[in-house]
Length: 268
Image (cartoon, rainbow, N blue to C red; front, side, top):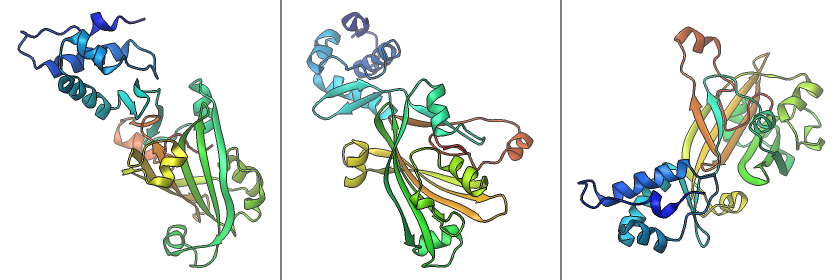
């Protein structure tokens, strides 16, 4: 167990700002601490480092901004949980396989599975006539029982008749392959940062306006038909992205459908 008092000792005469010293000592302590560990109370950090409340809060705020600490209102500040990485620019593992390999327990809660008329944007993304039938599948993806991602997929009903009546708690792509002979061949993924509205905050158990990672994905089947248009919102404290840099010929040979998403590759 880390000795916080010893770990946070700063040197007032060193010439470096106290908040900078405290931030870097906290950073080192975090590396030696298990994920989801609650930091000692603010007053203890102040006393051990012999610094003011403003200095302590500035150091902590910097580390929260970097994603090394997570502040939960009413509960305290914790070291960040292990993030689930996903590769960009190559085919990542599917959600279930990635979680299993990482020693995590994956899960899904189906919130909606229905057939609706395609709205303008959905119709455009799927390249189907506006008003045509589209299967909507909304799922809450779990990591170790903790809500990590809200995912809303749209698929042309004509490509997968009866899909809305099937068990969709497992891999959607695997089901499409097994029952419809459909496999995603290529696609595109866009990533941006958004803030949680009330619905997302409730579903993902985060504060309203919390920063989220949002992605939009479109995929095509082997024959070229649009197979899927999916929107995802993921907790930044549980999910991350990394990019594998390779030479241009290698990258081009593996252009991604799957260059994607938080933890949901071709076997999602």
